[in-house]
Every structure is written in structure tokens, then in C-alpha cells.
Length: 70
Image (cartoon, rainbow, N blue to C red; front, side, top):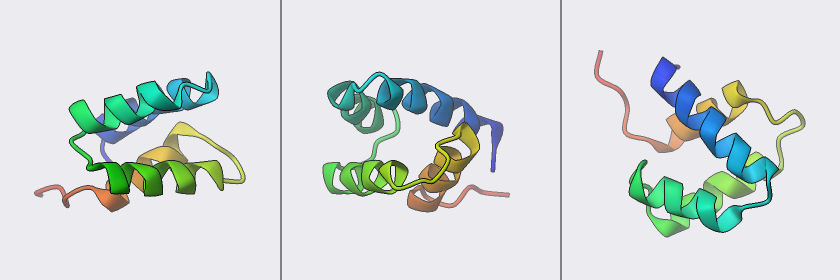
């Protein structure tokens, strides 16, 4: 998992922790370029995490993103 995903995950976690779902959707749409249906799936998966950490969120974001070039 890249440092970029960890940073994005930390910001997204802050929005979710503050119950700002609208801000989280806008963030994923504008900056991460996720379509709305994928955003809903990401938020749903995050909401079911037993321990909501930046690393766990980064793993979810990475799963739904285009694979990074190596």
C-alpha cells in the first residue's frame, strides 16, 4: 500500500469520524475520482470494519482503485 493511499485514507477517516458523509462523498468524487456507486461501496465497507484505522481504509481504497504501476 502506498504512502499516497495512507494519506488519502487518513483524510477520509477524519471526515467519516466527524459524521460528514457528504464531505466524504465529495472528496472521493473530486479528488479520488471514484463514481458514486463505488463511493457507497467504500463507505459501506469502512462502516463494517472492526477497527477503523487509516491502514484499513487505505486497503479498501486500494482495492477499488486502478492498480498502481510498478
